[in-house]
Image (cartoon, rainbow, N blue to C red; front, side, top):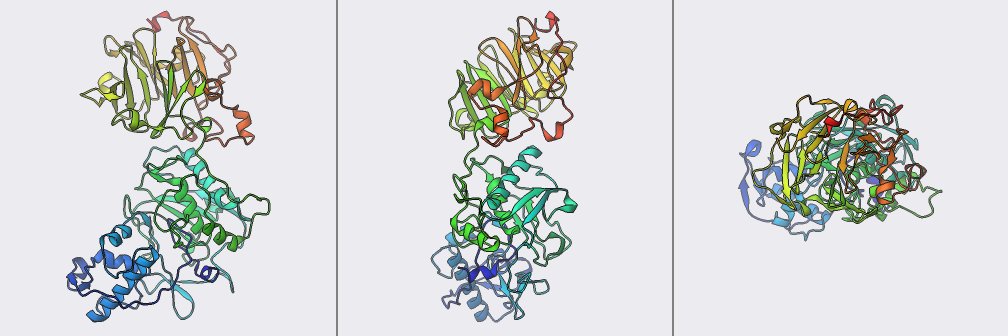
Length: 559
């Protein structure tokens, strides 16, 4: 295997690869079809489509010396050999024909760089499908594509436009992806400014370089990401990592419902450190996307990265299991109290809390399993006095009775007189519901089904003692209302209409409601916090605490 490590080069999306040269096979077919487009006048053998020919060429299975203008018998032999190489790499019985299994494997979500690396007579790597862009195989005599400096820096240039992810969520996942490699090697990683970074991370769509040999993203469910090995001859992008901005990633470590950003990022960082794709289907560096439950760095990847950078002498236990994050580390999207049970929502999942205990497993439950056809990433939710539950997301809202949707919904939020993308909905009293967005609050009359006159008003004019902005809220079975921001909450009694904590210091939601350790102890290493500062990155101007608490006795607000 160590001999194969000599082939480590730039590549992308999933795998630590020791590319192997496979001897040519002579088993070929005898059927030809006519392809469309630029090859419309050329017959491609073995039922091969034009895009499949390009795939074999781009990923290194066809020799750069092969041309579609070659005599049919030569082209057929070369294409048959290329198909066999592909089948052998992906553990498919080698037939030399494009059967359904081969086609389905070929178009699975994957990396946009070649699986097989070819070199010319001067030991330069050839970019598959081209003849004019070459890269040195080694960055030092007898060395590999690797960093000479073991104290590396990185920078995040931009953030994904799809998925409604917070910047701090992305930063947290990327940091953990770097830790996959630093905990088993002598490498260390630190985030810094773009102009100072060794590894730059960005989200792009389509063609995103003037270099015509630069890989191009192809939209959703194709090439998910790619990366460039250090000192590989690509210029400024050497060592960089690019994600397809048309994909929707999930930031939840234990969620296999979408493309796990954590595992894709860890894979791409492996490329940025000098690892190639692996032909081990269980490896992180396998070219195609595959979700690894209870992630621990596989042995194939471990051996490869330690061959390049050595072992971490301080780590006697080997790779850690990157387990599902505890709900104690989460900052939830929204929360609601129904029948004395708290339902905490985050992304596509929810957790149940009752009587100070977490009833759900750490990974939570899928929202769609309890509320039929309800979308993920809910903005706000509350239950009316008639037992129906309203869910808000963006410019729409849904009404559910138990787990079933009420017909005629979703409807537009504006029909209620409310703005889009509200932060929270809190019913107070017998017929008033308060809706929050940024620094404003709307009071809604449930009987009249309209906003009360004089609203919206600033939150601090109505609820003295609350911060400028709150993110969640609910009225519990004890009759009290609770307002949350980050991991902190404020308690209000409807009888006194005041914030209960006279000092104006919010309490810890997870600690008081479902037995989490204190945030202080988590900062000291018991658990890794999703957002240690309890603030949204794009909302840092909001105050977490107020200097003092004032009281309001405006009884009309609640009547």
